[in-house]
Image 1 (cartoon, rainbow, N blue to C red):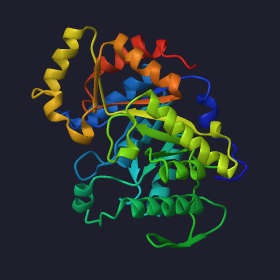
Image 2 (image 1 turned 90 degrees about the horizontal axis):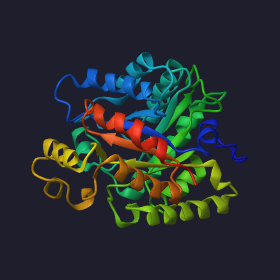
Image 3 (image 1 turned 90 degrees about the vertical axis):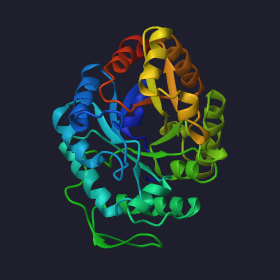
Image 4 (image 1 turned 180 degrees about the vertical axis):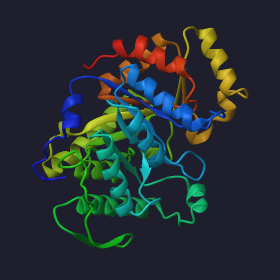
Length: 336
């Protein structure tokens, strides 16, 4: 990002209002998951939500770029992206190529989400070395440099420790200029939030999972602490902190109209019980709530500084949650 720190139009449009997007990761959708995913994308657009996201776990889930391309064709307004692409799963030039093509295919609706990766088993599935956290973060920084570089006005070369490219230029460039908004996932205060300050248009805090103590964002107080750390990084480099959008991901949202219906939905999806299914780092992965409870949950996070919520579901056919979110939750969660 240029050092005048001009905010992305995507950020400017969302700084003064709370927006919601949906991430579908349909491992709980046994019947035609690809078609159900596309149907959910169309519904999200019809219901007036802001964005539709997928996940990047190609070793055990749907391939994200293929489905984002299909979503670009069957939708017209909703923003599209991934929470988040792992920088290691594809060479950065390939990521830049796919991102540019999707941005053009969608007529400028891409949000490019990137992260350092966390699933050691999936790295092994893909034949990739699972480096240390610090090395994966360094590789992410190299990937960002290459992606931005090959979208430039002239051929770009880079000879890094983890990635290299020579005399490369991706054409056509993305439709959004100077480039699509970049979202970096993670809440590590020393490295990840420094990278957000230096390179990104948005941070993304995962409210359910902590792979280390420094990554945990379990409630409003954690959001405030992380945003203070991000603001300190911004101050050190002279960047206005309000040029960065604060986004938050709910691991799996289940909404139902009554407490009894919430309990029934949880039993349907997780018959063994949440406490037995989701333990350790994933202990708070599911938010199961009535609309009134969800309003209280999201309003507290909004008051702490979250501006864009991403709610995830593992069942693309759970249209009840999408309807309740758009009709009975979103209108009542306000910016402070």
